[in-house]
Length: 108
Image 1 (cartoon, helix red, strand yellow):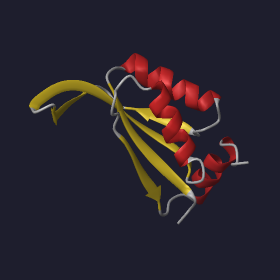
Image 2 (image 1 turned 90 degrees about the vertical axis):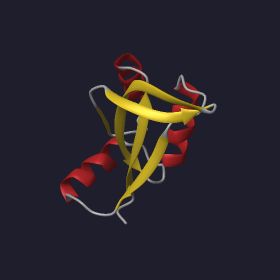
Image 3 (image 1 turned 120 degrees about the vertical axis):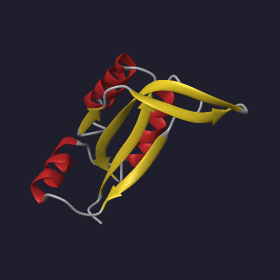
């Protein structure tokens, strides 16, 4: 394990994706956020099949901060039950992983 992870989050539109990402960057909870173009999401909610366009955000942070980041996303997110999935980073470019670590504050 590297000590870093990616959080996958979906939001309804670009404005929320940018606002959420900027807040987390300013609070030094994530090192970066990659926002996708609109994608069609199909899912079941309240017994009905729904089709909506959403944006996906891939955020990189430390595994030590992941719980705090998830809590903050829930506070800021417009959905009652947002998609937030953590994928631990098991390897990769050492220079990039070091870069992530230099950008997020250590847990006190």
